[in-house]
Length: 434
Image 1 (tube, rainbow, N blue to C red):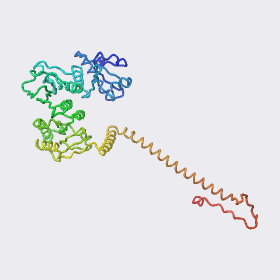
Image 2: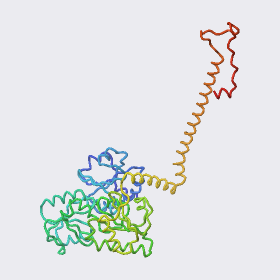
Image 3: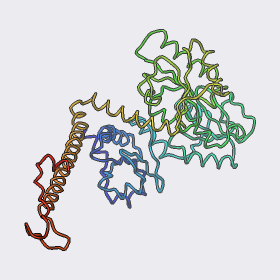
Image 4: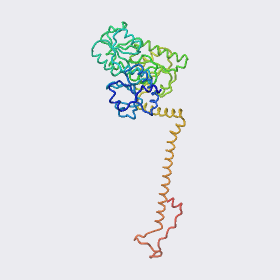
C-alpha cells in the first residue's frame, strides 16, 4: 500500500499553473467521504500500473475541501470525482471504479481523438480487442466534421477510428460513401441520417452491446441512450428451470430479432430484484421480465409469465404500437409517492443496519419535541390560572370600596335615609364562578 502511494502525487494550489504541459488523471476527494476511502487503494494501484507501463499520463489526487477554489474551476460537484485533464480540456470519468476500467479510460482519452487504421491487419486487431467501436470510412466531408464533433463529446465512453474503403473487411457492404459504422455483437450497423437522425445521438444509442448484464450503474448510463430496456430479473444462484429458461428467452430475442428491435430496445438480465423494487416502488416477483423507460421512469409489465420467445416478442411489439399501458412515470403524484417511499426505505434501512443508532436518531428528537409540547401546555394552564386569580382579586377590591356618585366616601348612618348595606364577602367558590 505504501509502495503504491509513491506513484500518486498529492496536488496543491501550484497544480493549476503547472499542469498544462502534461496529461493528468486526478481524483478529487474529501477526507471524510466513505466512497473516497474505498477508492483510495484502487487509485494507488492505478498509479502503479500507469507508471510501470510507461504511460504519459500522470496520476494525482487533490483534497477538494482544502483547495475548493481549484476544484470548483474544474466543475467538481461531488466526491470522489475523477477527471482526465488534457490541455484546456477536462473529461469526466463515469464508469465503474475498478482499476482496469479507469486505466482504459485514461488510455482512450489521452490518445488521439480519431485513431487511423492503416491496414486490414490493424483493423482486425482492433476488432478483437474492443467489443464496441466506431469507424469513419471516406475522405474529407461534412459528415467527417460531425464525426469529429461527436468523438470530442463521447470519447469518454467509446473508441473512434477512421479507415479507407480498402481497409474495411470484405463482408462489409457500403451503399454510399462516406459512411460511419459501429462494430459490435459480431456484426456491424451503418449510420443512416434519415432513419437515425443526429449522428451524435445515434452514437450515444449504439455505444452499448445489444445484450448486457445490467446493474444499477449501467441502468443509469442506459438512460442517456433514449432506448427502452428489456430486463429479465432473475436470481442467478437459483438453478431452477424458470430462471434459466427466462434468461435464455431474452438472449434469444436479443439475438434473433436484432434488426427489428435494436434501434428502440436494449436487452439484458439483472441478478436480484432489490434495485428494480426501488425503481418500481413495489415488490417484483422473480423471475419476470420488465421493460423500463429510464428517461421518464415508466415501466411495462406482462400480466402473465413469459413461456416462449414468441410471448416476449409479442409483448415488445405491443409496447411499440402502444397497446400496453405504461405504469409509473414522473407525475407530481408519482414524485410524492417517491418521496414517501424513499423516506420509508431510509428509516427501515437505518433500523435494520443499526437499531441503536435508529432509536437515537429518531427517539431523541421525538423526546425533545414531547418535552417542549408539555412545557408549552403547562405554561398556558398556569398563565390562565394566574389571570383568573387577578380578576377575582380586582372584583373583590371594588366591592369592598364603594364610592358615591359625587366622588366622596359615604359615612355610616349619615344622610336622610339608611345607607346602602355592604355586601357580605363571597366565598372562594362563588368568586371563581363569577
